[in-house]
Image (cartoon, rainbow, N blue to C red; front, side, top):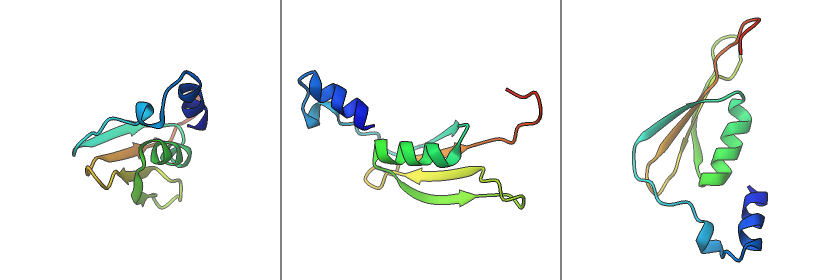
Length: 87
């Protein structure tokens, strides 16, 4: 994120010129390879707060829900267990 901000500022942009547009309400579900890394990245990028986590009995974290407090937008990040040979 800091690299994106630095590039925009180097091109003459101001802090206001790279703000994320406001999105209101709704739920977005994304499949990701790493729920923990993705939650950190999206949380920082979109100023979201963690709402909840789900891990099945095997302990492998499979879902993190983030919410943007001003708009109520919810982002659900999900990972799926992969077997041998899976992409």
